[in-house]
Each structure stands twice: as C-alpha cells, then as structure tokens.
Image (cartoon, rainbow over the protein chains, first blue to last red):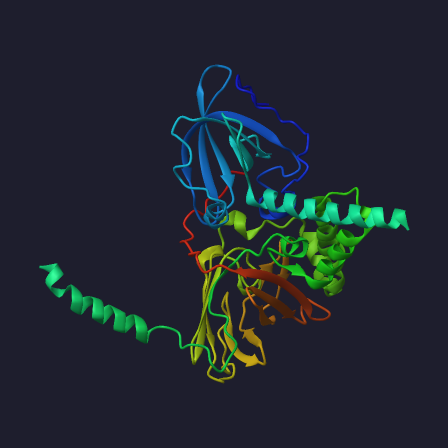
Length: 150
Length: 256
C-alpha cells in the first residue's frame, strides 16, 4: 500500500452521499465504494469535456514528490458551479477526498476539495444528491409526524 | 487597412449568419437551443445517463415510501439501479442472448477504450445537447463524444439499401407537441452501463416533449434479435441557453 508522509488513508468510511452510482463507467478504474484522501500542492487544473483533471504534487514519506491526477466531472458541470481554471493558486495546499484507483495508481475520482481556509468545493453530483436527500428527508419526516399525530 | 473593409465584412457576415439561422418554429413545437443537465430531482438524477422507465418508477416508489426513510437517496438509487441491470433488463432479453451475455462475463465499458458510443446510448447521453430545427432537417450536437446528428424532416422514408453505421439513418416528424425521430441502419453496438448490446436489427424511436424549460425524451428500442419486446428508456434536460458545447478532447485510456 502507499506510504505517504502527508496523510493518504485508504479509509473505508463512507461519505453520506457516495457518487458510486453516477460513474459506473469508471467502476473498473476507481473503487467507487471506497473513499480516500490525499493532500498536496496544486500544479494545474484543466477543465475539460468530458472529465476534468486536477494535477497535484504529493510528498511521499521518503520526501519525494509524486504526481497525482484527480479526475472529476466535466467542464459544463463544474462551470455551472463557478469553477474556473484559475480558482487555485499554483502551489496551493489542498486536501482532496475521492474514490481511489483500484490498481493503486496515483489517481483518484474527485468528490470534494478542502482548501486551507476550510472552504469546500463539492462534486456537483454529490451536491445534487445532498439537495435531493435533504428535500426528501424533510418531506418524509413531515409525513411521519402527521401520521403520528393522527 | 483591415478596418477600411470591416463594415462590409460585418454586413456580409451578418447576412450569412441570418440566412443560415434556423427558421423560426411557427408550424411546429420549438425545441431549438441548448439543453443541459436537469435540476436536482430524484428521478432525473437516476436517469441522467438514461434509465429504463419501469426502473425509474421503482425508484419513485422507494423515494416516496416512508418505510425507507432511514436509507439515504444514493442507497435507494443503487437499489433501483441493481433492479434495472440485474432483473429488469435481463427479463426483456431473449434467453439465448442473455445466456451468451452471461457466459462472456464482465463487459468492458466503451468509455474505457475511448470508443464513442453508438446511437442508442448517445440518445440518452448525459450533459448538454444542442438542437437546431430547420424546414427540412434537424441537427443535434451532444457534449458527450461531440456527436453530430442529422435528422431528415422532409417526409422521406428510409432508403431501400440502408448502410449500417454507428449512428444510423434518422428521419423525423412532429406529432402534436412532440418531435418523433426514428432511426434505422444501426450496426450492432453496446448501450447502457450494464454492458448490454443490441443487434444490427435494432430500431430506435425518440419522442421529445418540451414542458416549458424542460425537455424530456422517451427512447424505445426495438430489436427482435435481442429483446422479447420493445424496451422504453428516458432522460431529461433543462433549458441552458448560456452553455456551450466544448470539444471532446480529453479521452484518455485509464491505466488498468
């Protein structure tokens, strides 16, 4: 398994809203049931169709720089959420959560980015799922409460 | 020097642009423009890459059922997706075809070998789609694989000696508020994320309906060599006039 001084954990905790259902095509590339995170410095963000690439320099525990590629949703989905190619400073330290490569490559499917100031950037599909779930839960809880009152 | 000719060039460009603009839809429902991912809604999220209509109905029943209140939406999504891929679609398939499909084992998705999808999957492709209506044809451009389609709207029938291609030969007409596109002449191909295939006898009917800023399509796939009966699928788009379709320039074969 990987050995990084910066934290890279193949943590099998689940985000409340997995995107596994949204990317069946890539189920053979990324483990959509697992969530890992990696921390590194931004090299470049390229917003592309069909998928975006975020290049990151990660220092492993031997002190060597390793290149990582975080693949994410396409330019249209991200632009709609305000993403731009210059939204990160070159060399900016970020932490990225996502689905790890099934082959242990330095690749990940991007779910969310956490910047140094604590602000989060979320995969639009994850954000949509959160909105759907919040609306549904609120509606069902209301119905449940009404049923109990009757 | 260039500025001296600019007004004429601009006028010429404007005239060409005007002449090449789609004729304003007066005698037919207006579908022209750019459409993209629909707003977040359970059924639309489930069908953003196309879904079988019965599976969508199953998802709706799960989402609305208070008995499932403790399950999060993605879990319900996966239940409906498993139902679609493992029960519903196989139940439509001709037994011998399904057994052959199972014997062949896991399918490698076309996306992983940078091979553009055929018409069936393209008709349900995610993200943006630009549609322009003209008197005698319709043009469609999809963001996924940047596929450009040409649909004849001049009342012609399918040619007798139809050449089979990945996107086939499409003819269309209007039925009330609906745009109906029929496609024949497809080569055998793969559709859907379950890796299911269709034969070269497949025929596709797309029915587009516009409800204000929402565009819905119902896709009926008929293929007697693959399915016991036609299978109906769907997806939806939202009106997105500000979006442009970018070149499909980053298909990279993932390292496996």
